[in-house]
Length: 147
Image (tube, rainbow, N blue to C red):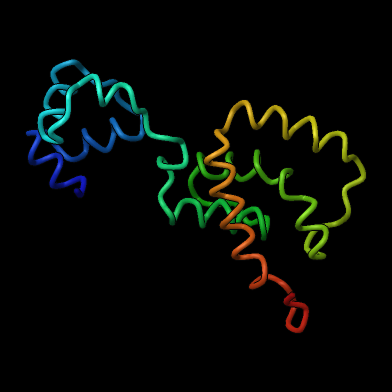
C-alpha cells in the first residue's frame, strides 16, 4: 500500500504520515488507532513491530550513502552525509583492497569505531549499505581491473 493510499484510508494528511514514518513527529493514540484500522491490524500489532532502520532508508538514500562512501563526495542531505561519514570506516578494508583508498595506518581505530557504530546503527542498516557498496564497487574501479 502506498503512503498516499494509507493516508487516505486512515484519514490522515500524507505529510503527517511521512513525518511519523521518519520519526519527526510523535504518534498519538488516536492516530495509532486510525492507522491500525486502515491496515486491518490491532494497535498492539503496530507497536510490537517497529520498522527496522534499514526500512527507514529507501533505495535511493542507501545508494546515496554507498556512493558517498565510495567517492568521498558527500550527499546533499545532512542526515545521509553523517551516516556516510560514520559508516565509511567500516568499508576501509574493502576500499583499500580495491585500491580506492589509501592503506589505513590505524586498524585499531577502525575496529573501535566499528564497535561504537554497531551500537548506533542496526545490523540491518549496515548490511543494506554494505550490499549497496559492494554492488557499486566494480563500477568505480579503473577499466580493466574489474574482478
